[in-house]
Image 1 (cartoon, rainbow, N blue to C red):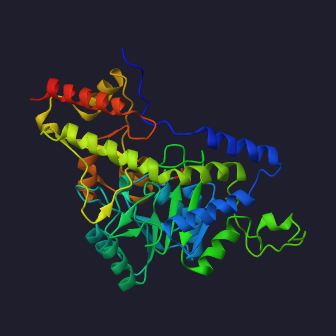
Image 2: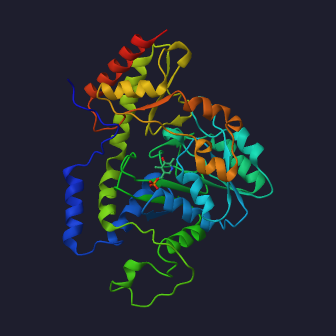
Image 3: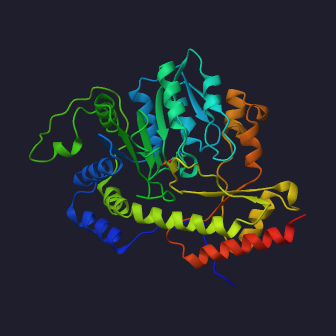
Length: 385
Ligand SMILES: *Cc1c(COP(=O)(O)O)cnc(C)c1O
C-alpha cells in the first residue's frame, strides 16, 4: 500500500529553519528588521509602492476596510464562493456583506453580479482571485471608478499571479495576501498588504499596531526614543520577526514553487484530458494563474457516485483532498443573519455539489501527482454510468 498523501504539506527548507533559529538567537523576536526587510522584498517583488506585514490576511482585510473609512450601514460586495474571512471583516464595522454569485469556469465573482448589487450604500468590493486565477479586473476597476467604490483584493490565493501582464498586488486600491500554513508561501500565520496610496499605507501601518504614532521597532533603537502617541484605538496585527524570517526565505523561493505547481497542474490537465466525466480548471489566456488550488468538477449526471463519496474514496486510496469552498450563503450565520437563500446563487450552489480540490504543492513529487491521476482515473472508470 502507498503512504497517505496529505492535501497540503508546506515546503520548509534548512535555510528557513536556520533563519528562524538566528532570529531566536538574536534577542529580537517581535516586529523589527526582519519584518521591515520582508516588506521591502515583497513590495519589490510585486512592484507595489507600499507593503505592510501583518499577522494574517484577515487582519489585512480588516485594516484595509478601516483605512478606506468603512462605516456602520455601508455595504461591501463579496463573492459567496470564498472563505468566511472575506466577508466577516465587513461585519466588524456593522456594515453589510452583500454576497454575489460566481462565474462558471473560473469560479470568480461575476462582474455583472457586482453591477446588479451596487446600491447608494455600496462602499467597496472585495474580489477573491479564486484558486489563484485573477478576477476580471478591468471590468471590476471600471465599475468601481464609475460608482466611486474602493476595490480591495483578497489575494490569499494569488501569489504570484498576473492579470493582463500586471502583478496581482498592483491592480486594486489595496491588496491583501495570506501566508497561512497552506498558502503558496507561508509564515505559519501571516499576511501582507500592498497599496500605492501613501495615506492608506500609513493609516494601516499605524492601526496594525495599536494606533501608535510611530513604528515600534524604532522606539527601542538608537534612532528612536521612549515617546509615542496613540492617535486612534488600533489593533494588534503586527508580524513577528520570527515569522518574517520564514517569509523572506519563502518569498525568494516563490517563483520556483510556482513553476512546480504550474508544471503539476499541467500534468493533471494532461492526465485528465480524455475524461468526459470530469471538468478541469479553466484558465483564461490573459492571466498567469498562481495555482494555489487545482479544483476539478465532477459531471454527476455521468457518474454513479456523489462528490462526498468520491472524496471518501480518494481518502481510502490514501489521497487527501478538500472542498473550496462551501459557499458563504449556505452557512447558518449568513443564511440566518442576512437572509440569503440558495436561489440567489445558482452557479455557486451547483458548483459546490461537484467540486474537489486535489493536492497541489511543491513538496509533492511527480510520482505523487501521477498516483493522484491514476486513482482519479480508476474511480471515474469504476463509477461511470
Ligand atoms: C486563507 C484565506 C483567507 C484568510 O487568510 P488568513 O491569513 O488565514 O487570515 C482569506 N481569504 C481567502 C479566500 C482564503 O483562502
